[in-house]
Amino acid sequence: MHLHLDRRPYATQPAVVAEDGRYRPVSYWQETVSVTPGPPLTEDVSCDVAIVGGGFTGLSTACELKRSDPSLNVVVLERAVVGHGASGRNGGFVMPLIGWDLLEVARALGEETCGHASRLMYDAVAHTKQLIRDRRIDCDLEETGYLFLATCEARKARIRDEVDLAHRLGYRHRRLEGADLDEYVRSDGFLAGVFDPEPAVVNPAKLARGLKTLAEEAGAIICEQTPLEEFTEGRPHVLRTPHATVRADQVVLGVNGYGAALGFMGSRVFPVHTYIVLTEPIDAADLEAIGWGRHRASLETDRNFIHYFRLTADNRILFGGEDVALFYGGKLIDHDERTYRGLEARFRRYFPSLSKVRFSHRWGGVLGVTIDMFPSFGQAGPDGTIFHATGYSGHGVALANYAGKVLAPHILKKAGRDVLEESLPRPFFFDRKPSAIPLQPLRYVGLQAYRGTLHAQDWWQGA
Ligand SMILES: Cc1cc2nc3c(=O)[nH]c(=O)nc-3n(C[C@H](O)[C@H](O)[C@H](O)COP(=O)(O)OP(=O)(O)OC[C@H]3O[C@@H](n4cnc5c(N)ncnc54)[C@H](O)[C@@H]3O)c2cc1C
Image 1 (cartoon, rainbow, N blue to C red):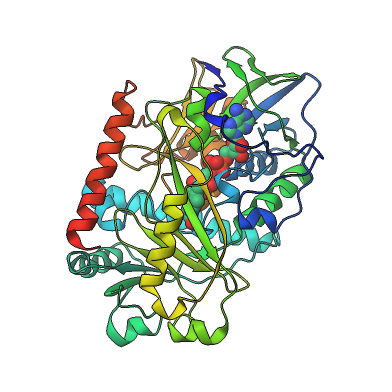
Image 2 (image 1 turned 30 degrees about the horizontal axis):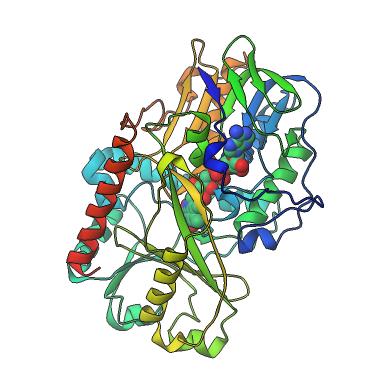
């Protein structure tokens, strides 16, 4: 494998670190943490494991490796600063969804595999919450549960099947309608819902920075402002950065939506953008008026182009989704005025009583999306020492925080540590290559056509 960083997708992005050395946050969450960008790597180093990407995937892998074997030398290379990517910009939903809702997963994979996959996702949710509690990571963890809402009759009919399937798989989902639903949230746009008590919300940038501290305390070296520019597979693998070279026995690629710019899985994992708007703090009476004051459940609609809503610790409403954007040439674009306007208009339709509420922040970020929406973890290279975890397709907060649990045992075994072959985690998305859409411009046209079909279905069903 040989990778080379293409700078063109970043061409429209402002510098992450301003001339005075200060970090430029993109999201509201990133404004809530104090970040002094670490200096770039300037001396050549050799290590056991080099991890590319300082998001949840890279950080969870660094933490898990150092926890399992403190003697391993682990170096993390981060192009910007830790948590600058999706991990510091997302909605903060720590949720068990993988790809689609349970019914769609069962339809795609069969009920048995759906059961295994969803169990792993619930483990990922439990692991993330436990880690935050055990290590006292200050990231506003709130166990709100999660309410999945039907916005049209066609999808309301599916709610009963979704709950039945969840119960068969052993989960505690509850169907909510009428007065029961009003207890959680009131809007003419929501016809029925499924409540799952397990999910939680966090401030994701605080979580990412907390994981950085944990990884460093465990002895991992984290190099910010250090982009991987060229990767050459070998023994050792060679990772070239602007001022220094890293030689590593094993490599982990944790770059998710940024992978295409490196030429990694460019025809299989697509950089897709999602955008968020955030209100000013809402007062208690306004929250009570829409029934959201008591349970504070996090909300998602079951449209193809979902809407996701949650409350922040200071009672702002975060509202995201409505559309996704993918740009020709894999361009990375943090803002999209059209989607912001669509979101704000939709928000006022869902909650007309909040029409006077003002929006204080708007931002977006990039996801790695596969054509079937399922992630891809795996191992490559002639001796299997190049690992990756990518393609979370919008649901990576829990799973990327669990990536270390999945990848670390494989890495430790390759490093000659005593790990039983049968104890190696191999979920269904391990060593799976998502389908490819090979050539540009066919890829761009094909993906836009697919996006158009999903929009048409939402419109047709009145979702
Ligand atoms: C707006 C938005 C809302 C979302 N909401 C949710 C949600 O509520 N719940 C949920 O489960 N998921 C959500 N997601 C998805 C979730 O955030 C991601 O799946 C998850 O954060 C992926 O983590 P990661 O570490 O793999 O990738 P990232 O967090 O993107 O980290 C990749 C890192 O790699 C670095 N990098 C890139 N190229 C290089 C290079 N060449 N050299 C060195 N470093 C490099 C980047 O700077 C970045 O820091 C959302 C995503 C977005 C964008």
